[in-house]
Length: 387
Image 1: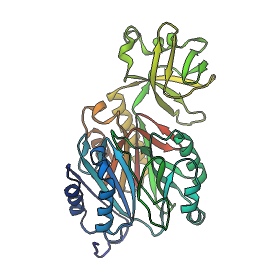
Image 2: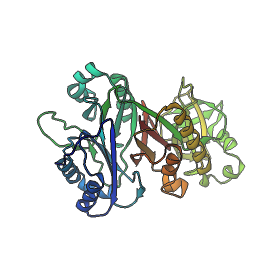
Image 3: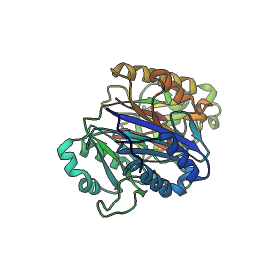
Image 4: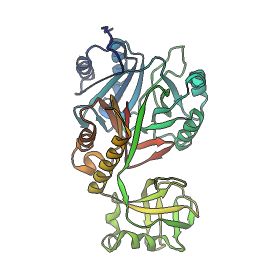
């Protein structure tokens, strides 16, 4: 175990490395970290190329650093202070020294919140939770409900994302059998860390798709199939909003046009972006990757690099105005449909964050879905600053 005199105040240290040999890659990160005296929480993100070795990597990191509690998961890409790694075996690590007893991990939640109450019920009663960093398995069909219930039960603002992998979906979390040993690598549900109000944070979300038409109303639907919008055939309205160029060649809308579902009561005009699943030109309906209800609002959005970059810079500028001191560390979680596939540059989002906040310790990953507050989003980027 590494020991050294602990420096005063909060500490965030980061490291990253790439390589197919997980042992050498993990050792490179440990060498970069150096002494970690006083640090009690670790953040670990792996690309899916290292997912099969998740348990071995975490065991090594825990043993060498002496840090017991780790959170994180696997993504198609990982974010580090120095670079963003995509489509290659890589890992990003951050360790933190925070106020005593200010963080409490909870084990995997798959169907209900009972494991949370057993692991953190007393801690929540004593401290309360201002926010939580969470990771989730996209294969869990109850995930949207679990996210909402966790936020409500813990009275916490959630940030996080769903694992993205072409193989295994490991998460790093508290063992299910708290106090009885057990694996700190699991999958299948929702896990993470609760942070007490003594941990000061600021968070913001940026959209990757911009509205291209007015807010409308679904007037006939069946599950995820939209039959009518504003009393007219859904496809007729869709073509009107996307413009003649795309309307004359509907094959071109895939990956470009999405549905936006406005969040009722949002004072920021927030909306959830959902993919188009199918279009029936003869029947005039379209379906999206989310059940909808008659009477629900809808708008259409376009995935566009220039608008996404502009929105991110606006979001970062607004966030910067909210903080009164330089952030000490950060976690950034972005959608796999952003990154190089949108900006043609793996480091584009990291560069924009640096423009706003300088060279700060940061880790994160590219997810198959993003979590902000109490909902699952898509095509977004969620930045959390530790102050």
